[in-house]
Amino acid sequence: MTLDHLAPTLRVDVGQFSSAGIKAVNEDAIAIRIPQGRTLVSKGIVAVIADGVSAAEAGKEASATAVTGFLADYYSTHDTWSVETSAGKVLNALNRWLFGQGQQYAAAEKGHVTTFSALILKSATAYVFHVGDSRVYRIRGGEIEQITRDHTAALGSGQRFLARALGIDPHLDVDFHRLELQVGDCFLLTTDGVHEWLKPREILALVEQVAASDMRCQRLVEQALANGSNDNLSAQLVLVNEPGSPGQQDMLASVSQLPFPPPLAPGNIIDGWEVLREIQATSRSEVYLVKNTTDGSRAVLKAPSANFADDPAYIERFILEEWVGSRISSASVVKVIKPIRGKTFLYYLTEYVPGPTLGQLLKERTRLAVVDAQNIAVQAISGLRAFHRRDVLHQDIKPDNIIYTDGGIRIIDFGSCQVAGVDEIHTRISRQQALGTRDYCAPEYLLNGPVSPKSDQFSLGVLLYELLTGNHPFGAAYHKCATEKDFARLAYTPAYRINSLVPVWLDGAIRRALSIDPALRYPALSEFAQDIQRPNPAFDSDRRLFSGGTSPHGFWKGLVVALVLLNFLTLLFFLS
Image (tube, rainbow, N blue to C red; front, side):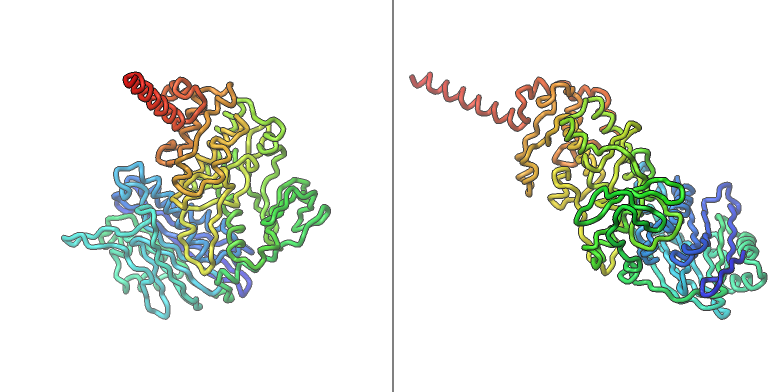
């Protein structure tokens, strides 16, 4: 298949072929995407090949997920990110997800494990990302060169095992290569069912025999089978007819390509969106209600603050917000809107959800009905689980970041989100750790400890408690905590002491989610959701034990004082 574009854009010829071979199931996955227009220039052409590990029980699912997930997420990254940054962040997120899925198996290497090789052609440069024992070759001037190396190790008796792959370990080590393109360069991607059964000279001869790229790939597979291949077989070929013009690859330069929007006022139009009014303005961003001048639909436009125009770390995090939002799919999370036309300024759009925030509701009502608070918490859990399935922590769950409507709640604001693996990508940009609102943050944030989905669980527990009582579960003392000793001295006030309509079992569920030690919280949000909706017998004795309204610490302190007093009176009696 040939795709021509006007110079100086890339012109390539591509082909691919995959076969199960003598096996009943094909666990290989392959794909090539050649986008059109602006995306071709900003993101380039991608060929990706993955070989699900046969020893793994979910190898086929892992390879398919790796290929489809990489293509979807890579092309969703911001245009101003470099290829290395975009692909690196996507691969780390994919690896974390595959590894997490594999935890249901006895050993991680038996779960969702796959090799992975990707070739990205952008402008005048080829980028190769590789882990495992699939391969990428370059054929130039009648010579063939293996660009990647096999991540295998000797096992003895001539056998080898896969030492590195997607899904084996939460920490991913990817080989990266950057190569300048020349006219006539031919890149070949294969799985081991092909290259283990063909010598380099055979590959060269087969590639030169026919002109059509698809047929070349099919001939490679057929010859490997004829040579005795007993595995799945896949091959992809990308021939460079004309490289594009060189482009900037440095992230520090690329993030400044789009200027910040000027100060906006009602009536201003930006890329086909008319500003209706300002929703919110802070030192870090401006948020506007806008209307599409074509169809009249409404949206929310978030623009960066001009205060950070020369701050690369801030710009990177702002760009990350849009990418995170575009990856989350849930009825309880506000949706990011992809603009039809290109942007001339740095901003992003989300759907407009009419309705007050929970913060505004609390100002009006002080607290909500128990059933309303329960429903809100369950919907929030559904939204948070969508984040966590993508290995994203929201990190700023609070009343002001949840919109309440008759049709359900929407979680908003991706400004504090953390994507697993993103912080492992090293750039020359000095990042600042984003932190949500202090009073809703889990203790591990404030103690610089490891964070997890249980950290969002704690924030949700604070939120639910506030919806039921109008207060913070630990009072004003929580805001002042800075050390482990400070947190150990905190006293939890049962919600039913403030609001007698709160069931004891519901308070018990909240108290567990608010455990200072993350290990004592719920292992999964689904369990928290269950205990919010129906009584857990484990919490039945709570009111009898703490009916005085004190914390467990206060109960035992009072008991100790009473015993000491009793001993003192007994001693006085005998002395008299």
